[in-house]
Length: 134
Image (cartoon, rainbow, N blue to C red; front, side, top):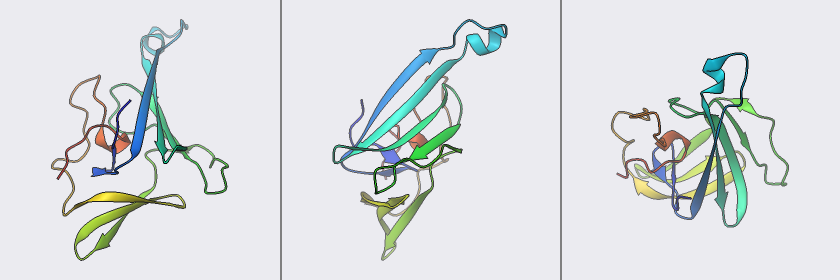
């Protein structure tokens, strides 16, 4: 569980991420059986907003699903969630995620180097990990 996680390198106060992992099950393909599946579930103000999943060590989300404001879930989509930065006078002050507006700790630039896996067990800023705070 991580408090005040970031999306796309921008810290969102109050956004909580819980991360779950499971080793692949025995299969005819030993490479698949040895991979570790992971899912991040993101909550804001007590409501699940986003799920992102894939395999440990991948540089970005394999799939995501965003909860709509009416409480239903969008169909899973390939890749990272559609996050848009809201600017005010050169500062990022909020993010939009689907139909949600999330407050942000003001930043003037993205984290250096973007979101890249530094190790197989890394939790990445692009999927809500403890990224660089600027």
